[in-house]
Structure formats: structure tokens, C-alpha cells
Image (tube, rainbow, N blue to C red; front, side):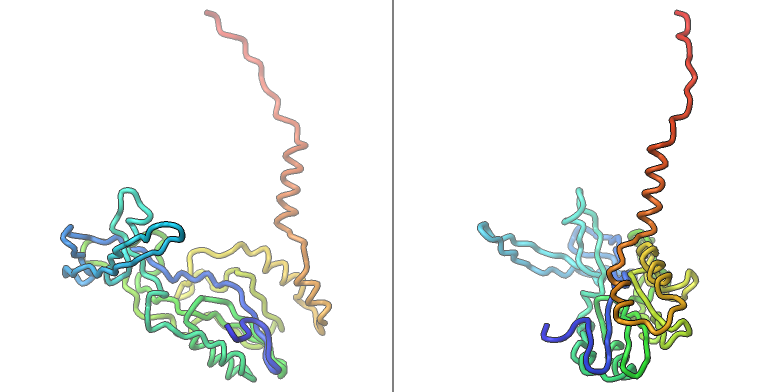
Length: 271
């Protein structure tokens, strides 16, 4: 793209890490074998069919009919033997989500302009950290994350026919309700794909986060320090020490040097 993706202009700087928000749901569908599916409102509707032609280099074209419900395409035929009527709902399939505001970010001169641009970011979901030449720092999670009345489910959704309405998306989490911070008392912000919400958050983003050891290392390196220089920041970026690797190394070393537990001899029973 002809824009700066992560970097800076003459006034503001920004960077990304992956948010890992859950923007997909799998639904077990009910089919009648006649080209219809049971919709979430309890009525039968015809499957939509898209005829796809996949061109194969050095081989014949592959023709594929993709069937879809109102949730999305049926993916069972591709991944399951025998095929299961399972559909994939994904924010990427929503035609109203088509904004990637890189130009507006590139031309922003302060947090008000920059955050206004972030508010229109549709995908992918990201953590964004920010700083500017006015001495401000900020953080905001971006990307459209579905509002799920029944909460997040860690397994494909399957209810009694006609009772899936509680699992239908009710729009997306508003931008101002996504995790965010501006000039926090700590004086610094950091992300490393780690958890950014509490357990009791009203709008859970995902059921799975990356392990926290990287962000813990950054906090230990920066917390309580002032007047950090470029050299200090490069030291954090190029730091290769890993507490989790050290702990694993200690455990493996201990396991390899610990003598085996004594065994008790047992005489063969008489025959």
C-alpha cells in the first residue's frame, strides 16, 4: 500500500501488535436435503449458491459450488469427512466493513485526529500504541468485534432449531467501548499480543490470549524509569532475555541431574 503502515509522520508515531479478537463464529446448521436451511427465526430458507472456478496452474480448472446460509458459507465439505452442515460467520464477509484509514492516520497531527481515524478501522483487529510531539501517549484496540448477547462460545454453536437468535450478532462493540488509554499515570504503554481486558469485562474480546511473559519483561524494563533515550528503547527492542526460557532451562537441568527414585526388588512368585 502507498502509505506508512506502522511508523511516524512529522507529528505522531504509532505501532501495532495483534489483538487476537474473536471475529468468527461457527454454526451447526439444519438442512432439509432439498436445498433449504432452517434460519435462526425458525423459517426454512433456500441456500444461496455461488459458482466458483479455481484456476490451477498446470492443471484443469476446479469448479466448486459454495452453499451459504445467512451466517455464511458452509465449510463442512472442505474440512470434515463426512461433511457436516457447519457455516462460518466472519467479519470479513460483511460488505459494510470496508474501511482501512491509513491515509487519515498518515496525515494526522494529534491524538484527536488520529483516534478519529482509528474509529473507522474495520479489520484486522489490532492493538495500536501512539505518541506525538506534544508529549502525549495513547493506546486503543481497533477493529470490528461482534456484540454477542450470549457471550463467547468456545465450541461451534448448536441450539434447538429456531433458538439461535441469542447467538446472532447484534452489531459491533462501539469504538469508545474498546480497550483504550490516554496519558496513563504510569507514564508508558506497551503491548505484546497479551491480554488487555479484565475477566469481568462486559464485552469479552476473545477466549485466548498470548502468554504474558513478553509484556512482563517490557514492564520490568521500563517501569519506574524516566527520561528514556533512543538507546534505552533500542535495548528493550533487542533484548533477548526470556524468563520463561530460563525457567524451562532450570527445570530441564534439574530433571537431568536428579537421581532416579529407588526401586524395590520383587521375587518371582512360585509357579
